[in-house]
Image (tube, rainbow, N blue to C red):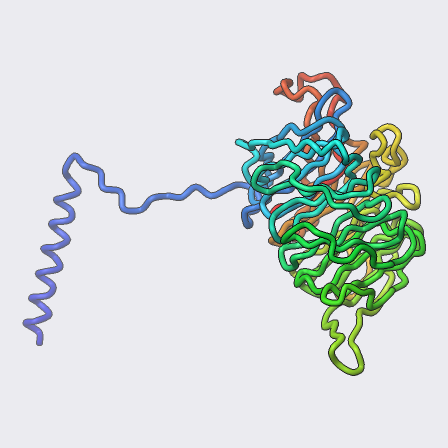
Length: 434
């Protein structure tokens, strides 16, 4: 046994000697390759995309890299942009001339922007949503129809007649229907995404519906009724309203939280965020399980936008202190100067504990805090400060803030320190991708 150990030791010693001798030749053999790590706060791949208007030319989207806390690129879009939509990996921008720009959101450095020109019979798109087919459906407020923008060609392939003054579209990849919210006729039109035909012309909801959001599983649609302070809940199998929930006065926006299966509604009339419990909705049992109102959370200003981390821990609300009733149709319309944006002087973002449903702190981000969204990895929140011309990148772990200036009105001015003062574009909407 001892002899065997000696033999093995000699073999190993000889092998080591051969390696050392081989290392003395002229060829460098590198066995460990260092991998550079990104700076900032590492996280999953993602971009925060910020839409800005530009009084001196075309507006833009600015991309902030989530993992590195760095500026990833600036994409020029059309004149007087009014809405930023999210569809899978694509960003859709509605411009003031009714054109629709689209591009792959995570390729901002080499983005190929495609422009869809609306059919002459359409006009006044103010919002839109992406369907399970990938097509983008617009709400054409002035012509009472919806344009279908092809995901493949970025051209308008069809126009669908809906209700009076459509203002929003709700849908996602989990459902083969789109729900067009009609503000003036107080109803919702249901459109099939397979052949773009109307399935149901009118589902009556509350007064002056202004926004809609579909649950992650595609089973329910939550319609925000600004006129009577309610949320109508539509079952997408039956296409009927199964519940009407009172929230706060002048609600304007809703966010669906897939982690806790809740809907958060920002109420511009009484400085609250309403919470609706939306899990386990089931009409097939007795007694029926329906969504219920959980709480109204008082915040430190008038909220105009809300988002929740998908780990279920926190909610963020942009406290723009805009006039009651401010929403995406009157924030920058008919022009940024004539919309409500000029009166939105709030400077803070509210941080809300999603367990206790209480505001725990506020973070100052700058004047004109009108839009907020969160990263998919739950590490960052982003808030625009329209009047300050900046975007706040909030690190969730410690509430520290990195501030990014909005793009210059003249994008050829490459060195901001040498550019004329106060010539940045005006940021007013943020969405995160993916």
